Length: 433
Image 1 (tube, helix red, strand yellow):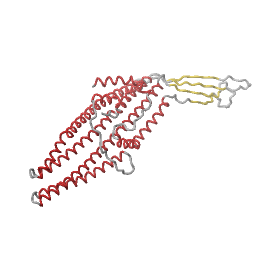
Image 2 (tube, rainbow, N blue to C red):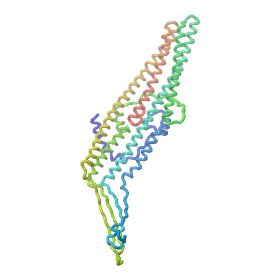
Image 3 (cartoon, one colour):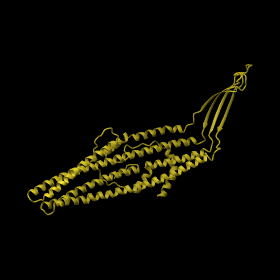
Image 4 (tube, rainbow, N blue to C red):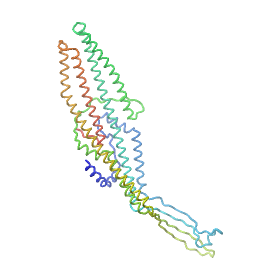
């Protein structure tokens, strides 16, 4: 892994020129996958989010600064009177008296303007990556809340189904008790289970409203609007290749790309610091106009020019220290990139492994546990009706079946939440199965 990161850092400098020629990033409407209703609310959330709008304005502002960084300083114009005698203030008394106009222009040392332009362009692209990372983060948060809402909605349906089933069982238990074939404790047990379900109904309703409020907040809505939960999700069996995911992340993850650009910016700082050992030049051109002497003869005008440049006299405390500082900053940035890349690889590995394990659990419940529980539940009712098993066994079989079905749904929504998190890490939607 370390060798791979070292090689990648070596390639960063090579791709710098190509990066600078690329146009501004064009973002997809929805940076992660989701069913159509989720895509719609993600689009709404990305369009209305104030943090995203602020970052977009920052990108636009930085982009306007690119031409500025590549331009020369404004030229300077000067006006002067020279050698005017103070005893008479006459322009025809001294031959050196002049009315001067001058133009001065500062020229940075060769290559400095190109480096500053490159630095400004890199700053734009780094901010674009930060913007894209924010879009991914908001999209992932919306998707996670949406899938939470889906599980709550499924839980409410299961709760309603279980309540209806227990009401039927309660009526059966009451009928059997009246005819002397059942026990009164069976009635009490069914009533207790129904009371517990009533409490759970209240809790689920409260939790649903909390999640809907969270989604409305992520969508920046001014007023509460009910959110339609997902009804059916596709089969969660999408292909995952951990090495391929890590490769995609190394090329697409915006946080990692921002760090790569930061390394380029640090290298540009080093190049600029080395240029500071060479002087900038200040070129000045002056035209001095002289009048006539007292005899009416014209004095010739004067033309002057000069070049002024700075001398790196305090090199040890200025240029040397600046170069040392930016070099240390470059090393720090490279280390930060390595740390982020390694951390990202571990997160991808862990999340993808979780998805694969959840897929196996979902398959186990779908193909084995639920069909077996259905058979057990049906057999338990038949056996209870003929008095072969106790009431407890029969009701537990029914409740266990519904719990398995709810757990299956929990795995399903958990898979899609992990998928959204994984897509945020790699920086793009996963390919469809």
